[in-house]
Image 1: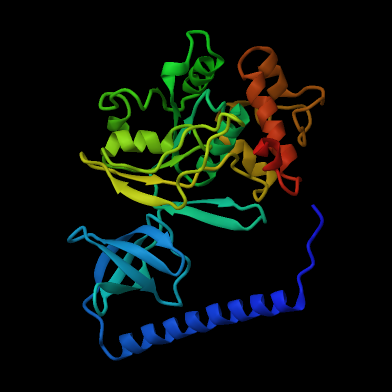
Image 2 (image 1 turned 90 degrees about the vertical axis):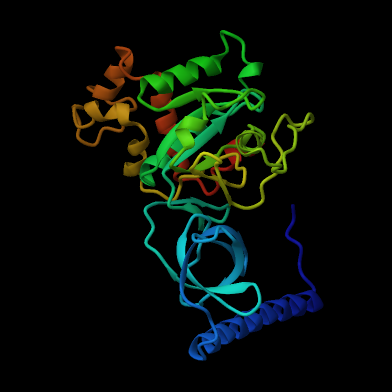
Length: 342
């Protein structure tokens, strides 16, 4: 598509809009500091970010469980769902976030411009939801595993829509392969009770649900919480899921534990990481690393490659080595989202 040239009037309108946003932001920051200086705010309270709405946050008070719409001080970093904070009540039913607690983990992903975009904080485990409809590229699962390893978050693989699987469906074998590698795995369906399958893995933990659109993340959470989260069916025209969740939001399990539902994404880009970090998502490679004939072996066609020999002997899955090389190759691409975009 050819780039559209903006008219002088359109450019002026854009500059005016940006100026107004900046002016409102500066005024809001001044008002917050004046309220703090004048002692107009209540006592400090502890809370957790429930959802983020641009310039405002919904903070859940840990003492009462109430949600309070808050602004944050200008000197604080960008906050995300799951952050623990200190806030102070203001006038009416609003408040001000005055401090952020240290994070134990942060899940972030690069956007289409290559900028890192935080998704959620203080997560114990990443629930990677995939399905046969829409078909989840297996390489995408490996990208999630790399992201989880680098974020120090425990991944759990959930193969949803088991009612659509045949006994010899390849996704059944994929799940067994990952289980053999030591990853927690679950086969389930949002159409069936989850009390004996998924619920025990979520209690007393904060979990984030990730996966491409349409695989059933929100449907699973509906089942777990007995609440109505917006869901849509898979598009019949494209076979792809339709995005339903527009922001990360935190929910509480009736029996304990918290869930974070994140915006659906089709691909988890990793081109922002150093190539040497990719192997973190392939722990079964580790026994053979450093055993190759050449120190700088890329595990492609070099003679004496211990890792390729392990594949030949059936000790490492050929599919996983191929996925590893695919991810490495994508690190040099300007926009690796393209390989799963269509």
